[in-house]
Image (cartoon, rainbow, N blue to C red; front, top):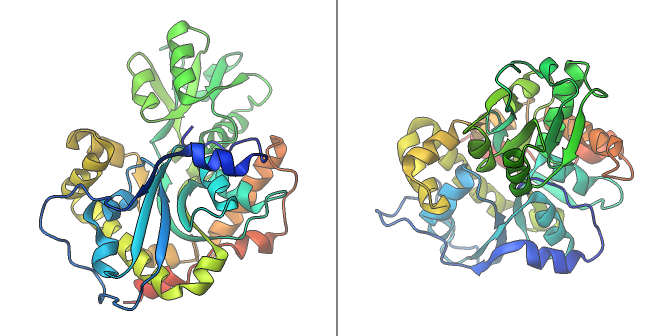
Amino acid sequence: MRRTVAAAVAGMLVLALTGCVESGRTDSSRYTGEQVACPVPVDESFTGSVRIGYQDIPNGDLIVKDTGLLRTCLPHGTFTWSKFASGGDVIQAFGAGSLDIGLLGSAPTARALSVPLRQDLKVIWIHDVIQGAESLVAKDPSITSVAGLRGKRIAVPFASTAHYSLTGALAAAGLERDVRLVNLAPDAILGAWKGGQIDAAFIWEPTLSQVLSDGHVVTSAAQTAAAGRPTYDLAGARGEFVSANPKFVEVWTAAQHWAVTRIISDPAQAATHIAAQLGVTVDDARKQLAGYGYLDAPTQAGAAYLGGQLGADLRGTAEFLLSQGEVQGVREREAYAGAVYPAAAAAVGAK
């Protein structure tokens, strides 16, 4: 489950290792074109090692990885990219001390910050705002709105960003108690869909495209975000690492900003890099890119995101997780606001 929060706290080290699909790979680029120039002055002084966790999600992180941009900007650093299957695995790796920076959804991030984990994480970047990439799909063609799902069985990975969006859509339609929610992993959703055990599913790629072969979109994370429940893919970093390496974080952010500007200004080239990393066609990569919103550094540094609102959004997500029994307690507002680190985005955006 790509963004699902793992339920167990015990066995954190073992789960962190088993959840890591591809570990210890320093040669992470598949790009064969001309070397991409560093968007900021090359930093010869950084000699540290950084462990980076990524997921197969079409955003700037994969472009940075594919171009080897960190090696270009920080030639004396060592960067190990490890692929993770879910945000739950990422927070377990943070807890085990085996990761410095990692991509995880806003729901796992909120869980990591809440009771009992209380992890010392800093959100340093918003990789993407989830839009149509997570959608509610119904099989019956007569169901054209959320209200039409009354009495139906809806599958979703519990405690995920999709679950958060789904409950918001159901609440807006007044159906919280009038549907049956089924907790299934994406691959299990596909089996239940084919077997007729469910009527609808709120899910992401690649399962989304598979159920759309004989289903249709009723609503998506774009609509639930507009109604006040935004979901994100975020970059979390160990608080101690950020404090010790503020200059590195700024260069890392500049690389991510450069990648976002490529997505916005040259989506065809951006899709080429992402397709290479995902092992899909460029056309498929472009379709996947269309399901997300991407924010450059000046936008992220503003009050609507890292500069203010994101902390409130994370606390709202934590309250949702508490209602679902996925955390034991929600901390004070300052704990979530203080976990957001806008300094690097602000510095990059000002240049």
